Length: 113
Image (cartoon, rainbow, N blue to C red; front, side, top):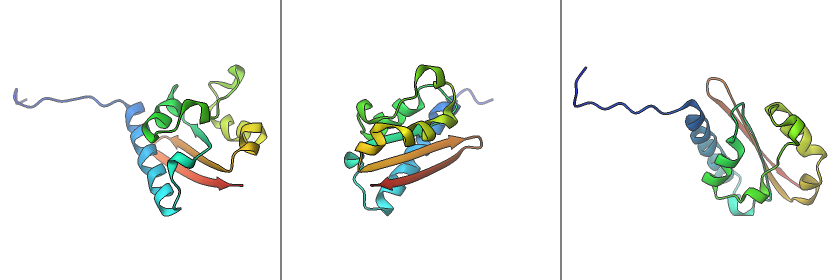
């Protein structure tokens, strides 16, 4: 190994957030949505802290991130269902759903009331 070459380890979690940010920004651009106008972010992944990290990178305040009740905190697949039943979604006019999975696979959807 060449001693001049330095390797940096990028965590899976960091790559998930980076890919989710890119996909979300592409969705916003294609939909002519200013991310500053997003009233609710529903972000799910199997890694703890994903939603908060993604919101920070997108410039969305923590108060506009859907959160799971403590009993469901580890069940990332529950967030969309919880959001659909929440007053937060009913009150919001613009919601972005983002989910990441293995591979890394990212899906994003925009909901406008």
